[in-house]
Length: 346
Image 1 (cartoon, one colour):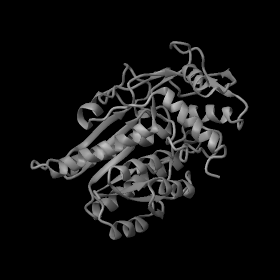
Image 2 (cartoon, rainbow, N blue to C red):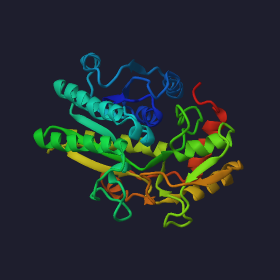
Image 3 (cartoon, rainbow, N blue to C red):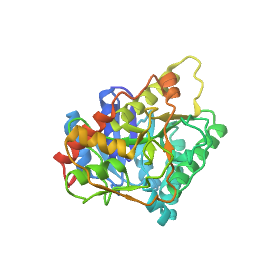
Image 4 (spheres, rainbow, N blue to C red):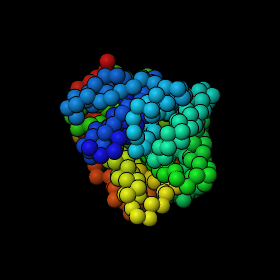
């Protein structure tokens, strides 16, 4: 078995898929999650899929004493930090909740890591830190700015990590900026299970397909894009999970190299490098699954942008990682999950 990794928020959508990828790559994992936006059942299913129990600790990243007990009981190589609130609309309505959880929580986690001399950290960031991009595709040097408190909370944490890297050369801080994660595990056993009406497009489409929602609302059809609807870089969650394994492998290589130089603050995009419009995704879903998706156009949402897609060159060059799965795979795996689990993990 390779090194042991603490996965905060490991019971969530991206966390569960990453735990499977980590196990397959030989890493030993401990999940730490407060289950505020995730399910114990998801962890049970991961255990079934990897055919062994996973150590799961229910706890909050803002609870320093709870974190100290976890770090005292384990010799961690590093932490992958997924634990965070992620709904843009909710962040606008409840900004203090987002800054408290996403920013204060990350600070308390980093403080405990420093106490226990664990300084390898992979942060779950987001393409929202780029705001409304000035040029496309977006690379890691693009200007950062945010249009909502959720994105701002991610950007504040990035600034904290930058300052931390300057203050102490022993920190290795990789921040992975995801574009739009979609899809589900090929088994159909784990997938995206939003608490309420989905904020993201693909689960909204799949819930219309399964009959939970009446029709899809498409916000804006007058953008300067191929068909007037917003364009995004959709990436399969399984590819995204492999990106975290590649980042960890990179940190291990640095750790074992004779130079032993620190990584410092290292931002890396995880995307496909291609954009698809809302209507293109709806059409692909219908073509792949045979399910008709009734939709209506609605006004643009405040803070939404026309187009956003990545340059993923740095991930390929540095980590040897690139997205492999297609829009067809994303739609097929989403439908397999949703049709097998119409009510999610309930």
